[in-house]
Length: 111
Image (cartoon, rainbow, N blue to C red):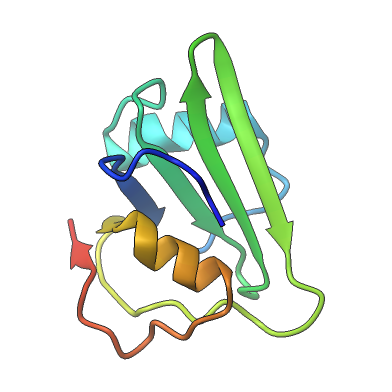
């Protein structure tokens, strides 16, 4: 479970991401594709093409924090949305990372 401020904005990449990308490559992706500042207080979330890996990127005062989770079995069940990015609540992200299926929920907003 992520212990972050409840008012943090969580931005999820709608497209699958190459998991070989590191923090600086993901920051460029945030800046160019999302048109957001990677050094903001937002949390940026990227999933692999298979759906069993996730990377979380966040700026922390003087550098990036990159968190990586790889499921031993199964896949993350993501909602289907259009666009390049969408917003998700921190509570929904925590549910997703714990294995809850969010594919049928209507709580995300495509941007």
